[in-house]
Length: 321
Length: 265
Ligand SMILES: Cc1cc2nc3c(=O)[nH]c(=O)nc-3n(C[C@H](O)[C@H](O)[C@H](O)COP(=O)(O)OP(=O)(O)OC[C@H]3O[C@@H](n4cnc5c(N)ncnc54)[C@H](O)[C@@H]3O)c2cc1C
Ligand SMILES: Nc1ncnc2c1ncn2[C@@H]1O[C@H](COP(=O)(O)O)[C@@H](O)[C@H]1O
Image 1 (cartoon, protein in one colour):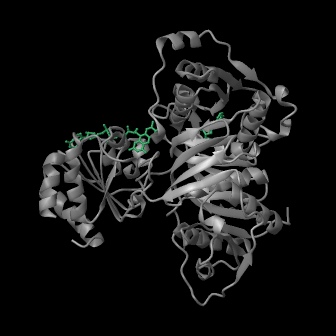
Image 2 (cartoon, each protein chain N blue to C red):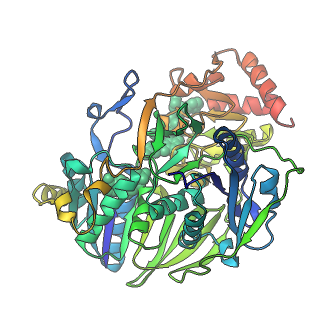
Image 3 (cartoon, rainbow over the protein chains, first blue to last red):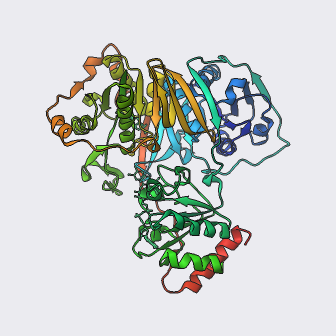
């Protein structure tokens, strides 16, 4: 299908700020575009006042900016209607979308509307010797890596945040922004009543995460972990066991059904290291584990481990570090 | 109100074995069960039923043995359970799966609300729900952590996190929602329902039943636009693995060095 050409990154903005995953996609997208010798473009839907030139600085050749105040409230149906129309007219061969919550919710709608394949949560993208686009994704709760080819057009993938480095910013790159009118401006079946930030904890952005689990016996004891986190300049995280026990909110949960984190340092205090927990933190740069059971699986992925009682060692660490 | 719940039968991920030589999953190595996230979907339907009254249909596409999960769903409170099974459905990716499920839903009639889980622990894509919503042309909301209200025409939900915020969203029905594990705690079935679940008839749908809604080449392996080229068992990242037991001082000094280079202490 020769009529489909080029790579399109669908960028994401939150409250008019471009999400960093967009720059990561532009970095990987550039690599693929150079290999295939095709253009790399970017589409962004949003309200007035977004610094979209930044997407040019990060390597997009043409930035398509579709403006409507209704795009400031993320809603999948309205976004989908507009993006699908754009794709029908511009026919990119490969479409990359960040696997953020919104990206993961909107991408399948777009793929279904286009009756094309979508590979979720990719961790790597490659062009093979026959110029096939290969999408690598973990499956079966992260136990395997599947290499996937798409036989329809366009080929779509969502890519996890922090999987690739951000594209370098180069302000000498040409600014080329094409403003386009939305094809559909309003969708009456859905009303966004309210948007709010309940708490601003975002453990996915932290450089140091101090996480704890079922070793914590009562809620008050979490103070020790908080003090430890404060001492090392980190934020607190938790295993699902602790969340399920009602001791801490789910925004703090690390793992397969919680947040995936990739900090510089992850300190697991009294966490056994179940596969579903590891799925959310095993890519951390340095892993430190403290556990009283020397056979706990968490030790097998730790850079530094200490076999001991957290109630004894953490107060010492707070004092000594 | 008619509610449809989508559930998938999956292997118990704690026990399933992976053949790293062949790169395949040995499905017979573990018992299968209802996808844990779909338990929350089913419980949401039951909660709505208890509060507002509803008729709950549970639908799954899978092999014949998935009847077991449907009986379990009945025991937990479903009114009707339906199995879409046909060898021509097998090998389906998310596109073919959602197309097939959508055809089945059209075949079954009309529903005010469709509920699915956040993701399946084996497929792990979180795509099927939104794709079904698209094939049926209805709005959807993912990451639903609470249902504020629902009536014949409208539902209001709280979305846990979208674009960094919580969102309260009102949708005209019919609509589809994908719920998170935080929405409820799935309850156990009663002994009575459990016994009854062994006697019920599980309705079955095959491809031939769906001729008005889907073509044979839109389902199963044939109807799947994504193909697995190969499967690799990932190599774990090499870790230095310094484990200390009684030597607190060495441990402390080692991690102090690591932490110093990252923070301001
Ligand atoms: C579908 C599904 C999704 C899941 N998603 C997640 C997820 O996202 N995140 C997640 O974390 N889990 C998840 N789980 C649950 C997971 O399987 C484990 O049950 C959970 O991670 C265990 O938490 P834990 O390590 O805190 O508890 P445990 O496994 O009970 O481990 C506690 C550890 O603390 C140690 N310990 C106890 N007391 C002390 C002490 N005083 N000092 C030092 N060490 C001590 C023990 O030796 C033990 O190793 C999921 C499960 C399923 C089925
Ligand atoms: N074969 C299936 N039959 C019925 N429902 C399914 C099937 N596969 C997926 N689903 C539903 O779609 C959700 C997301 O699945 P997935 O896209 O596989 O992660 C699941 O939680 C189920 O509610």
